[in-house]
Structure formats: structure tokens, C-alpha cells
Amino acid sequence: METPAAPTTFVADVRAGTAPGPSGLGHSTVLSSPAVRVVVLTFEAGHVMKEHRAPKTLLMQALDGRLRITAGGEVTELVPGSLLRLDQSLMHEVEALEASRLMLTLVG
Image 1 (cartoon, rainbow, N blue to C red):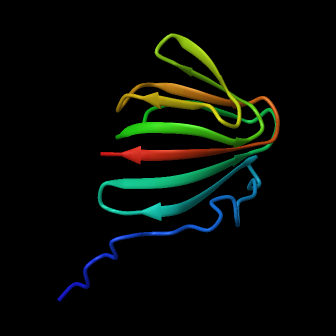
Image 2 (tube, rainbow, N blue to C red):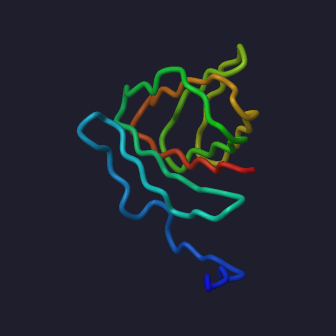
């Protein structure tokens, strides 16, 4: 018999344990549940995550640094405090204008 999931999940610091990997990009899943997953990506300055798509609706928030997001024919600069939502399967590219951490929330 499967143990039911706890009704709450607390993550004390989503930035903990995040560092860029050898390719200039680091990845850490900080929360995963059936309806939502939260991932923190850590970029070295200048790293570009080439155009790709996500299978779910995305919420993107810069935890620090500056990132340029190109999606749906628009360019958005993400800085701490800003939020960007992308529709499911929308092609997008992410460029780190400086060393940055990006929190992705995949919903659906």
C-alpha cells in the first residue's frame, strides 16, 4: 500500500545546492509532486539554452542575475521579482546575461 503524500511541502531554500555544471548549466529539482514540479537552473554568464519546449505550462522566475527569454516572437528580460508564464509546448530560448539562477515551475 502506497503512503499518501503529505498535505504540505516546505523547501527552506530553493537555491541550496545549485551550481553551474561543466557545461555552464546546473540543474536541481527542488520539489516534485503529481501536479507541479519546481526546478532551479543555474547559469554561468553568457550560457545559452538553445530553443526548446516544455511539456507543461511554465512559470519562470529569476532568483538572481539577469536572463533573456525569447518566446512567442517576444523577448523578455527576467530579473529578480519578475515572473513570466509560457504556454505548454511553446518554443523558447534562455540566455544568461550574467551569472543567474532561474526557478521553473512546471504546472499541469
